[in-house]
Amino acid sequence: MWTVQDAKNKFSAVVDAALAGTPQEVTRRGKPAVVVLSADDYHRLLQRAVRARESFADHLMTFPGGDVPRAKAAPRDVKL
Image (cartoon, rainbow, N blue to C red; front, top):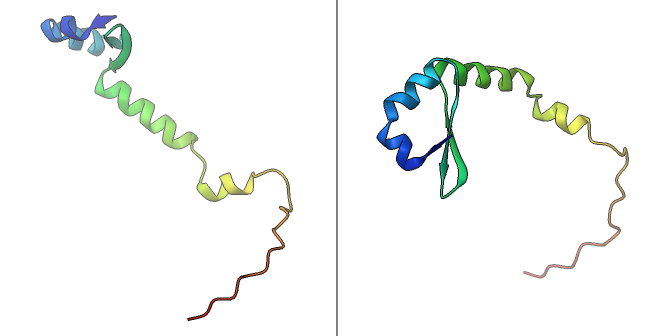
């Protein structure tokens, strides 16, 4: 794990380690901030996420509960 300052000072080492297959975590003020990983790893993760994602319609169709009770309020009178 690198601090932002150390990662700046040794950016080549951060990139080399990421290219070697080890993602590099960088912290800011002691808290995790970013992860540096190779472009191949990034694209692999992105493709996996896209394949795993269902369509919005499929998501809606899995909504539990069948009938949803509707409000019985009458529309208000609108005068123009």
